[in-house]
Length: 361
Image 1: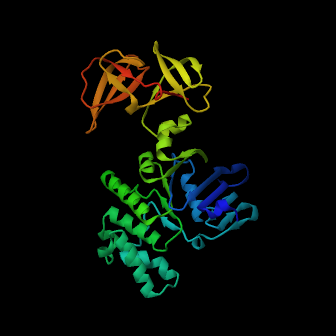
Image 2: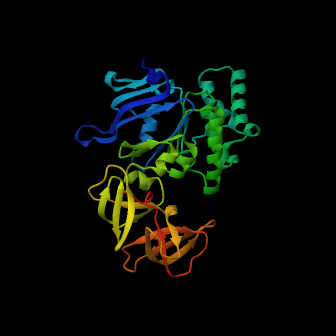
Image 3: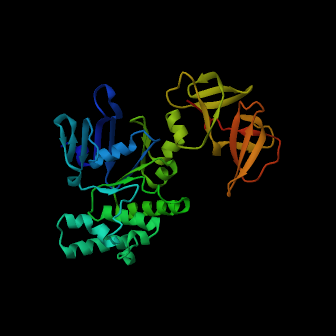
């Protein structure tokens, strides 16, 4: 076994998976490779149909890939070249499903203990393990309750407890917060991150929410059409996207109709509605360049300022901690959003866009 596999809790190499066969085959994963190190949280992020849940299920043993390898620690659990596939129950992975999948007729204790009983573990050890993990999750006093007697957040923690009770090398989370309402979701997000760090867990989490991925994970793998578009820590993914897809998926953006007037290295000169602006080239450069800037990077000025576009205010929307203001041309060709601490009066403003934050792909 190579050093690469023994230093990673999970290694996936050149994984291919398709549904169907022959002429009707539908490729889902197209050569995905990833590594999860001990104590690391990796988020699989991407739109619906990108392959993130399929990748998680392949690691779990719930989907059968066509080619590639999957290793957990120093154990190879799938090898396409040898047509070897270890059954899901032998992989010893902790699974937390989107639906929680709790037994409605079993107590919290029995839900968490179920897998240990199947493994013929002794009653005293089962009780010790279950109560310890329930205590870690703040559920010790709820051991005799049934799922219907608990809140959504508590049910979610029971599902996590059931996954952790085996002391698995890796915990797999499939959109674990998607069933919670917005406020509870924020609380659960911080709880989940704190728990993962405190217990030193290695976790692979599927989400379509970029805010959730950035808050919880150490590293993000952004999938697009069965391939990894870009990967890195949350800050690098947000601040230095390599492609237009990454830039648009990882934040809230304005897209500007711009004509490229010239380029000197990464410095780009643009014409936007007759105004010359300086911008920065990112990525490899497309044949049909796209110009974007994050909404929060646009600075609203009352007077003329360098590298700014004059536009009339259309409307402002109150968001609680700030106003989102919309500017645009009368013909609708330009539509630009920016944040303001105060509600703005109807007039024309200069929208300053820093050259290093105005990106051309």
